[in-house]
Image 1: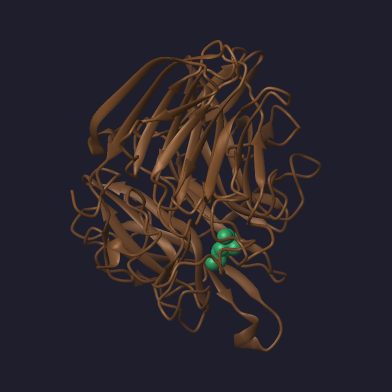
Image 2: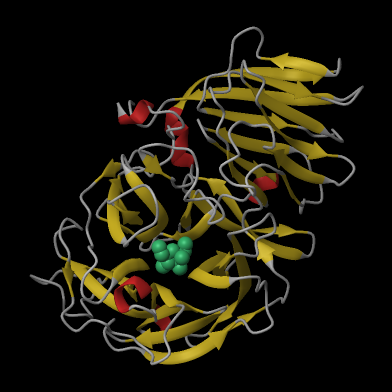
Length: 481
Ligand code: FRU
């Protein structure tokens, strides 16, 4: 069956077949989390984009639904967002009820025009809980004469101004637009000149409000490709203030949500009250079209709850796996006070079963590393490096990597907490690992493709070192439980 194919994620959403990239149109409505996604149903590489659809009641188990938006005479269906239009400002609602409205980019591909490409923003709406969608007859609703790299609208309701705000990626900047009804858009401001990282084009932005000790703080999430700290695609963010028209950042340096190479295009669900839940595409444009899976390509990260956390005199964006994932936990095995000799085999003699959750308490340790391996000696190594004072994941010998020269490698991530190297949570699936350290201030997401699943793992400590505890929990597959 499809869910037992080699490398198939067991705790992450992946489509049964074919290509997937960005998560799109995430909206929570009537107890259901909607997840749409960039999808090409004609193959396992990028192609004319559609919006695929999956739903979940718990952010853990996903049911793949039918494709919801097909390319049309206005173009391919690129990334975008969805909102619950509670007050029916758009007039698309029925029987006194507000509709779900998707705001997406129509992309006219060079393959359609024989040269130029154009992008403009369009709408579709649903009055039956997202089951069927109607494209608005007045599409596109926002266009510019010079309109390449003009895409990925993320829309939120700005209550103080009683208007919708669209955050849009335009070349390597952001533009903000406002609207009373989702149909008529007015330019407000631009953001990004000389701020943050500009190694590539800016894509898939999101503007998110946080309550921090009674103060409202805005975070502007900006995906960037290429130019990420560990190569290719990555997600930077800015903290600042938004007044309904203009976003002003409180810093100029780039800050990164995830230091691994495989979390891209992440944005948050709308209509989730006080929760800020993000899901990312678990891949990288460097090799997304080449990873060695057979019937499908790529998957999403686990949903992550975002929060602001103080680190020294800075405020930073932290992400942690949503607590709903706990419902997959089996019986834990707890190991306490593991000391030298240098190499401990854990668990001994039983093999590790993936997927698994591993929690380490490395308080007081100057260095440590964990090695996952299989019987043919392929290894994934990760840990905390004393010399650089950084976390790292090394997948150079983790399995298949010849499909792209950028894949094999060792990636590292800085430490922000004043008392680093303490608590680390790992989510390990058949072909991915997600590392959350120091309350989610340091995050790394990485793919790997061993020729057979990793079955052992080994903990290495420096002489005299002591690992306070290691908790290993097998996770149930979301496909069968
Ligand atoms: C980001 C992205 C978006 C675009 C989509 C096309 O990964 O390039 O900017 O809308 O993918 O599939």
